[in-house]
Image (cartoon, rainbow, N blue to C red; front, side, top):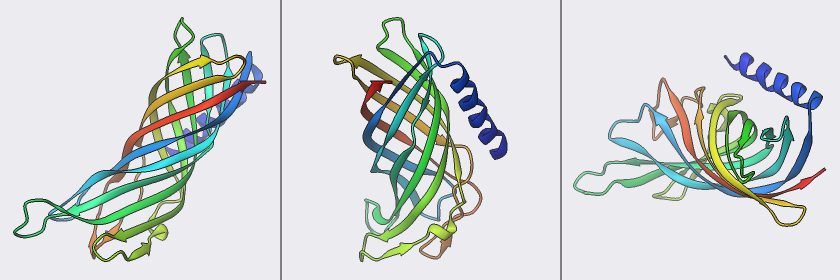
Length: 212
């Protein structure tokens, strides 16, 4: 599965380079709200937390209303593991897991007739750079990067708007991302989370593009 996805990305890049009608490049930044899904430890659950993303963006136009969007980026994503505390109504935030990735999304961008609204869909390859688990009760932090897979494949779906301010173009995009491959098998508070452990989340980005 992973080899097929990587081959697809390379094929799309080669095809785009041979058929380009226009190229726009720029930079962007934004915020992430991410969560884990999978097998929870007993009496515990995962909740969304916040991070950020920064990167560069390139729109490789294959026609007037369709482009291949490539966005090499750095992304910091956090999720909190909550567990039940006896005799307390509310859950207690026990551990916050923060993952830092180098990610390369490759999305097809389809632009509406007004040349402002657009939708995107595609895949991305994410390489874990670091991962830490912070105990929110005592503040202790543990490095857990060795428990993660070498890379993760995500599916992306998004909507956005773009508008010109002279020659540059501003854009704002909201994207949903779902991992297609397992992240890892975590051991948190001496409880192993076995089988499936994936991530999903929303990513809000805003940036500026320039014509080449």
